[in-house]
Amino acid sequence: MTNPVTKLRDTAAHYKTLDGKDRKRFWSDGILNNALYILMAAFIIYTAIANDKFLTPNSLTNIVTQVAQYLPIALGIGGCIVLTGTDLSAGRVVGLSAAVSAVLLQKLDYSRRLLSAFPDMPIALNIILAILAAMAVGAAIGLVNGFFVAKFKLHPFIVTLATQLITYTLILLLFMSNGNNGQPLSGLREEYVGFVNGKMLDFGNGAALPWVVLYAIILVAVMWFIWNKTTFGKNMFAVGSNPEAASVSGVNVFKTTVMVHTLAGMMYGLNGFFEGARLGSIAQNTGLNYECDAIAACVIGGVSFVGGTGKISGIVLGVFILRIIFVALTMLGIDQNMQYLIKGAIILIACSLDMRKYLAKK
Image (cartoon, rainbow, N blue to C red; front, side):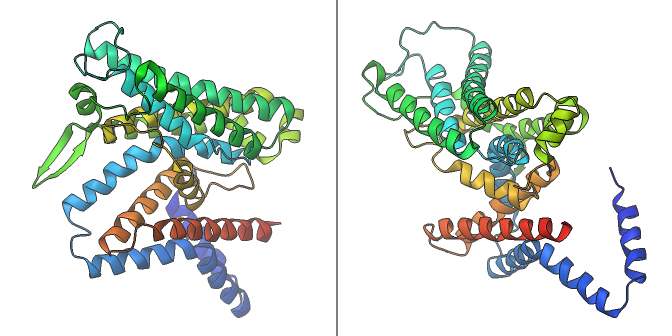
């Protein structure tokens, strides 16, 4: 990994060798390539000036908490984008996993308990079972996605669109089962909610960081290791850059593709477990369009749809920037419906800048 100080020194040395025309192009390219970050920095500064509550401890801990809650789905979908694909089923998988977690962790005496015959067990074991079940559900759907993409060379857009619809059907069937008749899954055990959202660090005056922040930090470390220090991670980037060349080099493209999608599904499942505790009541539309935010965060963070490019640190930064923008929009009193327009604009601008960088390299 290049030392930032060394990189800055090399850039400065390169700049000194340029003539007047090339120096102008150097600055114009730098501004265009980082236009999104510059605009967002200006927006954040404006919000801080317009609303003095934006940078308070309460607001900052709220942003960090939201980042931790939404990181897993972005980390999962980031691998799919590295393979030049995407995953439209991610949000629905989060919803199904949240529902599965809720079903396993409803209070024993809750009147509308979906699994009334489910045996009583120690809460720690129950929570572990719910985590494993949520991740297993996600992994199974990710495995299906990866199999059809790798085996039949179908575009991930088509495959994940199909599994999105199939997953939503499973959600509807689950909510209609055992006489629930589509009612939200509520009455979750306090231990489950506390395990995710209980106060880990209390700064006073309502500012506190929940346990989910620690789990997110651990998850980022694990995913960074997988992406950067394992053969699987190296193969993923090789397949994303050029699957034919990777195959000639001895990389099992089929296995790598399936594993990337399966790992992504596990991240969606974990996100669903977190989401169940955050919401406290799971509805049929839980998870709807979550993949849009995740894709936007990845693109903002430099994960390229061209393939073979992306960093875990970039995804974390992208999620941070996106959550900051949404919190800022709320504090500025912007109509919530307008956020969809802003999300779309962010994705368009980020993808356009990414493609510009790719064409410039060619």
